[in-house]
Image (tube, rainbow, N blue to C red; front, side):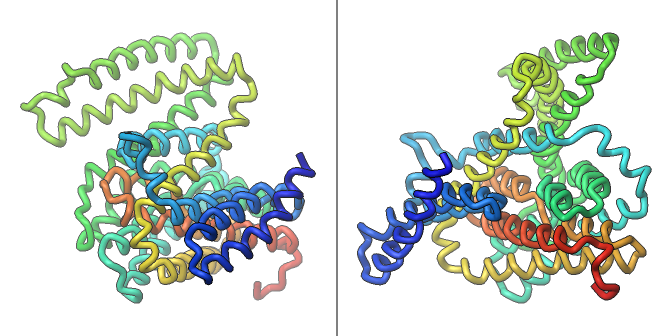
Length: 428
């Protein structure tokens, strides 16, 4: 396997040169496949370099973007099936969030009691710095309304588990990082629609209740199912009995809600009532899914370790589809959007760190807050853009920002890993 990866790495260079030469010569039959070969062999080959293994996932996202830009039609439809279907995007994003949720624990929320000031600083910085920086960038660069709304959207989302991974690598305050991620995830159903309404309400139509319901479906439902699985690991027999009873009741309720006889499908139901009933069905489904998944892990103990790989595959999927759908827009504003991503991300790290230091947090805690502020949940942003039916425009920022955040997060985490907080000069 190592030899194969080394061969792939050797092939990546010549393939890239052929792609560049073919593009300059106008050989449209030559450079597109060469570009894909270069991107894929690079992603495979990085595994042969111990120092570069941490960037392999980012390389796969880059390969997905290249493939989608070169052959967009291949990633929009398979036969008569629309790969941008709202329900497919929802299912994939829920899978991504569930996979991330299996790496969380109910104990993560106990960190609030251990460091309440740090958690408060992290949450306030997260939901103030990035939305406002995103809004400012849209005013500076004058993006078209829906793309601008996408920048504000990704800035208004909760942080993701990538921030926890970076805090672990950097050897900063991991407990604080995990806790802030957990709390921002719970706050997101209220904070994200509110921020979008205030900052992007003139750019796109923002329906507060609908967006809140979509965030519950996208984030709270799958993570709730994963946390139920975590609780069942140590549950007493009495707890098991209650969960089993709840699973039966929730299963029947969900089946009824999503059946043709559902009150949500009644012509007499108001839009708000229909949304709330559907949301109840999803929440009931979380109980069923959490119980069934836990039972499955008892048969397949290694399943939890496999779930993050499925999450990564899901992120690669909607990055590919989003890029393919928004290819024309990306070719027009790609360079400017990339610059916005770099500035947005750098501002998150900078303000997150220094505002935390100004609030009196120690350097390790400030480093964790920097990751929490600088790294957003791109999967959540893509899911919301898909739910709005604007994946090609509102979702475009997430497709560009997410890979960039992974690259810079890895670089910063490794830099801080080599410079423990105790050895950092006072002005750092």
